[in-house]
Image (tube, rainbow, N blue to C red; front, side, top):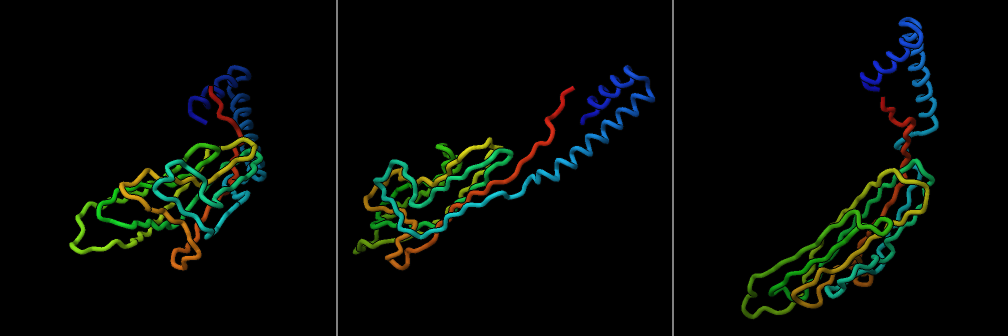
Length: 213
């Protein structure tokens, strides 16, 4: 409570009942508010994790440079129902392989994003560019680069309802064909890593709304 609010309340109380009685009521009122706050805090543990949902998978997932429309990454979707007085914290992390069949001259981009209730709330762009001329007598080879991606988002306090979080990915195009962004291909043996999506509901309580005086 600000100084002006204190003086305002104190002035009203003094005017109503005289200095001694007004000050007594003011401090009694403050003690009652403190007691109510302590009691309410025992029922509302703000910051407590209410629920955790997690998906960890290495199911096959990859896109190529011609997948320029966003799509949901395989198995990367969580639906969670909240009951009010809470917010959501979400995290996604994975290592991706960027497969380039011929790097004589390459420019390519891929995007990976967190989508919350139909809106992109966090995004990472993977960009690779190689312009150096090839050595004489060079042959075409497959080249893989490992790229870690970590995305996170914390919502504002949410009303009760069902909320959806998913991971999207798409290509921004490439100057050559057959470029792939790979999350996992278990059958390959080597290109076989987990990816993880976690959504947590966390308690958030506002016991008393601010009083403007």
